[in-house]
Image (tube, rainbow, N blue to C red; front, side):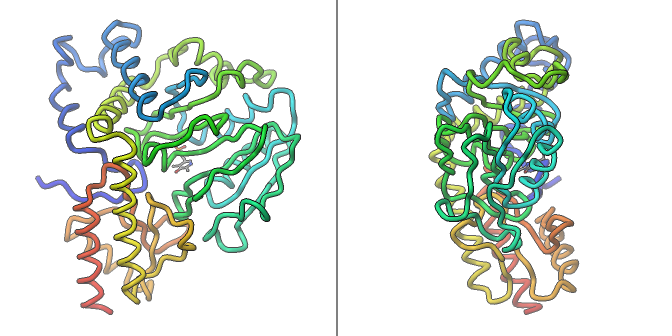
Length: 361
Ligand SMILES: *Cc1c(COP(=O)(O)O)cnc(C)c1O
């Protein structure tokens, strides 16, 4: 059975060596006589796994000591609520920068808890740009925090800069970009990322939060939605998603063994550049996003005639290139090329696209 090149936006491809290691350890993790899935989360074996994963993530991202790292459940979507519940801290306003589907969903959830303002929106460009940092963002200095989505997974739009919010904490939904390159964590009040894009299996969401922002959750909020409860209990207030946590830990080890995030950034940039160049030079395929803010991780593109879409997808599948269909809300194609997508996979896609164009262009 041959493995395919999987361009899914998430759950997404994982490094093959990580899957092999998980497979080798499946029945008997390091002479424990059991699978990680079967272990008590409070036993010393799983504690070792959990602590190593956090330590490795701290090294990869150079996370400062005054930040807590949480391994939670409920996906990035639950963070849309946990962020206002925890970060309003007695205030009633928050700013949202809206650059696509996910930031708009985050805004809609926040509106249930406070006066959530749209500090900037690129809806007029059909989410093919990011706002100009100087002229197009109207921050409210009495906002409790500013939320943005550095990489919009569906539209394939990415910020080439970090918004400057002054003393107001900056919150980032990095679900589809965390670990793709180095990040200056100290610029953020809180970073969250659902695991199934670039970290590990679905079921896990990683939260990195400045400790001084914790401890004033909205009155009446469920304890499960209180970051401080999770921080004080090392993310084991209840049973955590143990197997996803373990697998994320294997991915962190894989990244460390392959040169960390600087090395990953170089490879990711090369992959994205090659694919965008092939699209732009083709005169056949088109990417609608402004070249200054194109995503390294999610590359949407259109064929000249949507009637060719199914033909393209079928032929791609024959060539072991799968999950290239764009999100149902935008149509067209999308190639997600996260860390675990090898350069060879992107080259194979480019060659396939050229061949398809020769036949149908
Ligand atoms: C996938 C994604 C989400 C939603 O993640 P869930 O785990 O399904 O809740 C939110 N934000 C971004 C940027 C995403 O890519």
